[in-house]
Length: 110
Length: 114
Image (cartoon, rainbow over all chains, first blue to last red; front, side, top):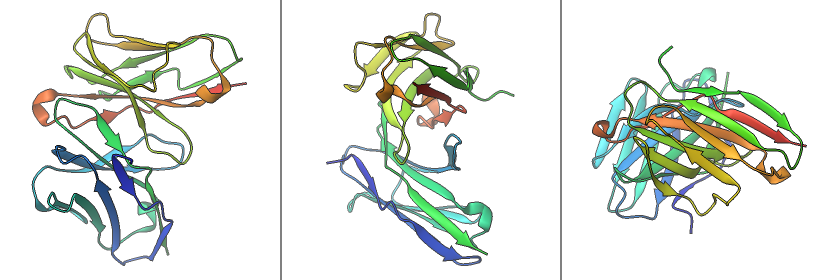
């Protein structure tokens, strides 16, 4: 079983819509979770980090964490074509390595 | 630029040759990570250092791979006797332990073994 699992997509949404990306993890000891955006041929870029149950908002991005369900999500409001990328979910313990999912490919259609 | 720096950015090598990648972390970041990423996959953990100590190595890291961080600053990742399966992007990342281990990636070093 993979430590972090994501639906690989592809996910397509029209411009201006809400994109919803989901991730589950297997290690109940994981404490830190991250969402990275990765454009083709580039390295991952940190978008959001979340450590506590609930929602965390930053501009158009909202991360949600539910430790009981071992579930992390990322909502992108008012999606723009520039949001088209692969989104990587990562989780782990402070003081330990982090596991990444395989990524979800998002396309925002103008 | 004060981000994570990696060198070289691209390397093409013949099978059987040795290659070495260098990573300069963000200044004062005490943790340094090496990941490998192949097409369509997420980054796979290879190893990490806290200061100069190598604290963990993945089972993915065969005997042909070795990493060092001799002075707790920059790090090198060497691959000996390269194989075609080593072709990937090698990502270095760093973090400051006090910031809940948020890791920041460098631009990556692309390796192609022919």
